[in-house]
Length: 239
Image (tube, rainbow, N blue to C red):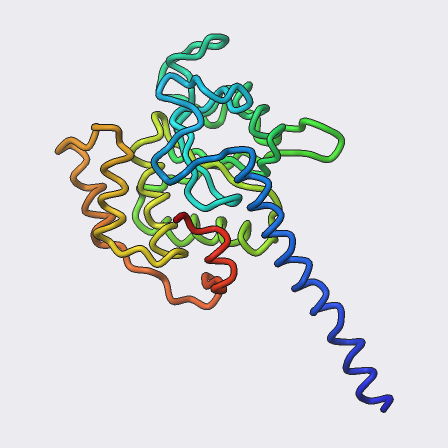
């Protein structure tokens, strides 16, 4: 009897944590579905000029990828009413602060230009912080690092959603989104390519053929540490 009780006490914290994790993911998904009532992966909360949801000002073409977990878009610099600057820049400070206030724990910039000039840890309350990361999403070999980071959000290792962005919210952020949908939601390459092209808002010209080829050739990782459960898939994947 003592032996079985000891085994139960050893196992109970793990069971409790698993239950807490599943409940936490569900709550987070429901929270952000209410905050951003996006019907599908094509609708936006901010438009190409950064207007729409004032709580997300500083972003452009803000779209959902994985409900409550991962969102995509651009940085509103060219059209910014407060701090206008060249388009080829990271998120403006106001955009980082707004994402932090919305509960985002991370934002990731998919280019290098002027990233070093940005604040890396943004505080917006006693406990709420956002970390600003950089990863070249279009560089071959970086896919696994990106997916691993998103996977940490799915599993609750990093609570709060992540915003992945490029300049306009079309090409580099589109590729990052496409591989997430293929890896975690089971999309095939043809569906992902259609998605990528449609979300360039007509900017799928021949000069981006190499990116389209990357979408067509991407293969899901079979690594155990990049798998998610059916329950998690049903919660986060778009209709």
